[in-house]
Length: 81
Image (cartoon, rainbow, N blue to C red; front, side, top):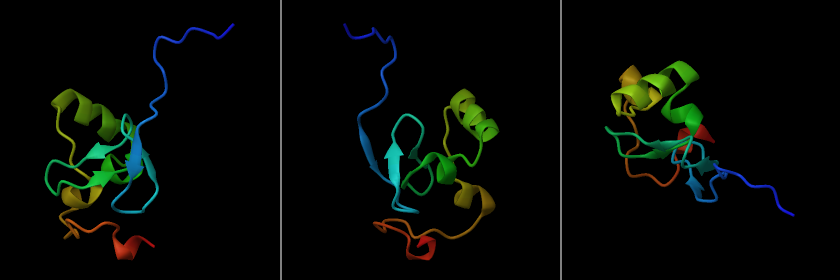
């Protein structure tokens, strides 16, 4: 008999626009400024920023917070590889 899970792990994923790795959409997401789909590391950078993003309902990526120019619209950022 299978065990019953209230919260199932996400089966929906995509690729990070910064590093090209797989992104779990529950942990990662879209930056509200540059509109790129990013993994947890490139979107939040840490658990404190993730908590603030959840509380403020605003996800701004690490590069936009640092004021660095981004390659918006690129499939994968060439500098990351």
